Length: 409
Image (cartoon, rainbow, N blue to C red):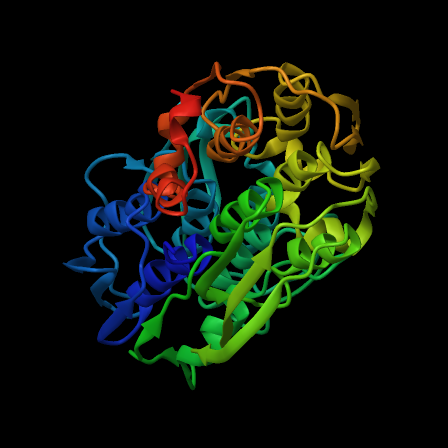
């Protein structure tokens, strides 16, 4: 599997702040992780890729970043931009951050608000909320306690990274525990008040593996093992939701890399039933909720997804886009303010889908899976966006025996 995108970002961004060279293995070649590497290069950090997921981050320490000469282009990666804002808050220079069309529609005020309290000066922001952003940091920052109104690993991580430059203890609370990759990596690298250069292995991306597990659950007769996948408990909401739907995913060969647990995941095709996904489970499965809605289309009975308003501000409005995608295949789906309901029926004939991914890789991948069990003729516009997280996705499906000729992109 491609390396976990979230951990990959942190291996680069936090690795750059270490005192010395950080050897990274398992790094994804996806465009989002490349965005993090590119902007770090603009800040004076040398990152050498050796092929086969290996890279060396030549860390410059907490005080070693250089002022950029040009705007920092974060591409499609919201994680790059939001975590970078936390780092830039502690830098005594000015920087401008830009992104592609999709990222330029994603709000940043929820990250900027706590960082402003710490001392980040926002010199310019479109509509006071959206990229492009021009900021100026300072050192030291003001330590704060922040009660986050939402559970978001990006907000939490930005504050924690800014906290490396603060004049005291910085703490964050959130209504539910979001992904804790930053906490684990900082604990792995911490050496007093500095960050030591230690090797980092990036396990396989569960959010990407989820689509191969999902394909197995959709296509009768399937039996799939995905190796060395990260199974951090803050990320396994997808697996817990599958259990509620009647699917069993076996964990074998457990292991741990730099405080991150991993395992091989084994699943066979199974009949699914509708369920309710809400509260903490929605937080822990936030990126996989469109996929769970896709699987729910072939489950027996209704599946209700709630407490997922965060999906509105992902690469697209994923609530609206998921409902539109499902309806294009003839699936009965209803949109709610904070989620959706899918009325599943494994016997209902599907129609060939006509899907506009609108720059969202997960919508394109969900449509690809439904195309495997729909009549020929599905067309997916914007499927090239899959390269941001899983460039070899369609090749992986084909290697497992899927007829990818059913998918027109």
